[in-house]
Image (cartoon, rainbow, N blue to C red):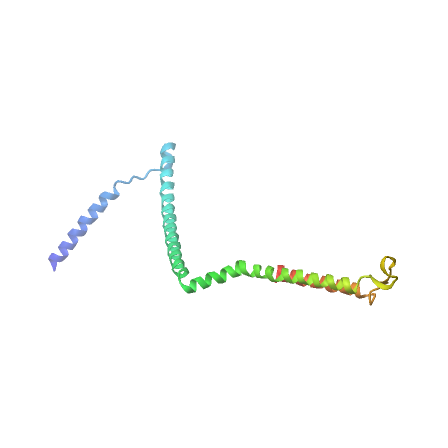
Length: 178
């Protein structure tokens, strides 16, 4: 037991002497006693050491982000090559492009056909028309007499215009907003 303690003590003594030799290489001097260029050199070296530490951390963060994005890209590619991935891409494409396209493809024909129907109705029901009243004579001596037919109601052109404006607003809502 005594030999064991002796061996441990001698190894500690040896280790402490080695550590003492390392510590003696350092000299403590006041800053005011050093030349200015040496102070700038030491400060620059200290700044470089701290910047180097931050650069190392930045590099580690960059590597971690690159690895994470690489893994994400690999997994996304694997998912995209499955049937579920194709369906998901279709849904995303439909949300981005398809829905506005469908609005346009439905709204514009409804607006076009509705405008034609409203113009036909307005022309037949709301405008004054020249209507053939009587025909006298035959051949070259034929004389045609016309009379002006007024709209059935005075308020009908205004009401038709209001309904048409509402129809156009609904179509614009379908095309642009909905």
